[in-house]
Image (cartoon, rainbow over all chains, first blue to last red; front, side, top):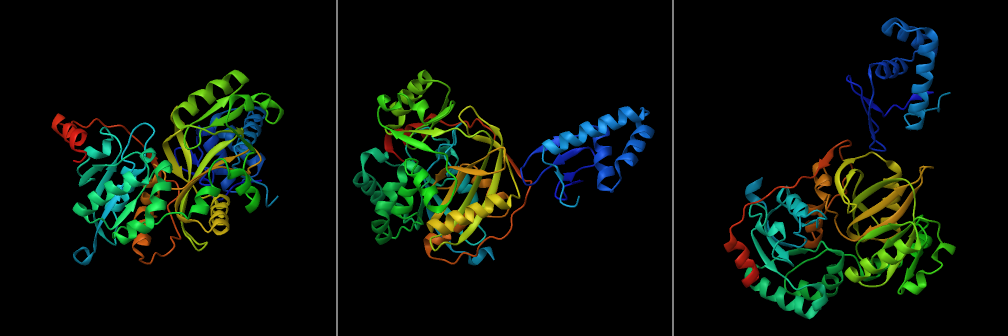
Length: 83
Length: 350
C-alpha cells in the first residue's frame, strides 16, 4: 500500500489528485504520515515518529494512523499495486 | 512574427456572459490570443443586454441577428446585410439552438465568403438528447437510460421504468431533479414552457461531474481534448470554477466518441463518474462550452483551431495541456452609457 505516485503533496499539507481534480488539506499529523509513507516508512516506524513528534502514546498514534489510512483509501489516494 | 500574420474577421455568437453564460466571450478571448492570426471580432447578438456587446476591448462591432425561431431565411437576410459591411471570413456559432440554422446555411455562407466548421447533420441529430441513449448503445458508450415524453400523461407511472430521483430535461437546455410525480409535473410544465417539447426523463446517476471539451476533424481524429472537474457549481448547474485534470479514462472516452462519430467541430462532453469509477455520458454539446478559456489557458487554443479549420488551414493535434490549472469565474459591473444601449436597441448594431 502506497500513496499514488501522481498525488501532489505540498509542504503546507495541500493534497491534489490530478486525475480526479479533488484537493484536500491535511493537518500537521496527516502531512507527517504522508511524508513518512512517501519515504517508504513502515507502520511501526510511522507510529514511532508520531509518538516522538506529538508526544502521544503508541496506541493513540496507531489508531490515528489507521484512521488516516482509511480516510486516504476512501479518497482514492492509495494504490495497492505493489503489495 | 506578428507583422506577417493574416487578419481574419470572425463573427461570434453567444455574447451573453451572464450567470448561465454563453461561450462567446470566452471564445473571443481565445481568438484574441491566437498566435497564427490577428482578428477583428464581429459580435452577433440576440438581445440588447448581452454583456459582450459592450466589451469593446474584445468585440469590435456587434449586430443583432434574429432568433432561430424566425427561420433561416430571416437569418440569411441579416447575415447578407452584415457581410456587405464586414466581409467576415468565419462565423463561430455558440448556441445549440442556432446551430441547425448555421449548418443548413453553411453552403450559402461559403459562397458569400463566410467559412464555418460545424458538425454534419447526421452527427448533430445523433447527439440530440432524445437520441443520445441509442447513440451510446450503438457506439458502446454508457449513457443513462432515458424516455422521451410529449405529454404529462406519458409521465404517469414513470416510476415503473425509473427509480427516484430522476432527471427531467429540456430539449436544448435546463434539467431538474425530481423526487416524486408532483416534481415531475412541475419540472415538465416549467421546462416545456421555456424550451418546448419533448421532455426527456433520464435515470439519475449519483457521482461526480466531469466535462471534456475537444475538437474533432471530421475524419475520426481528435485534435484537442481537455478534461475538467467542476469545483463550484451554480444553482443553474453551471461551473463557476473548475480545474484541468489528467484523466486518461476521460480522454480515451473522448477519442472513442470522436472516432465513432467522426465528429466535425468543437464539442463538450458532460460526464458523470459513479462510485465504481465508471463514466456515464450525460450530454454531448455540439459547440464549445462557456469554460473554453480554460482549454486556452492550459495550452489548447481550441477557438483558434476552429477558425483555422474553417479557413481550411492545417491544424496539428494538441498533445499536451497543463494539469491542475483552475478557472474561477467572476462577475463585473461595466458602466455603459445609455446611448450605446439606445443604438443597439434601435439600430440593431453597435
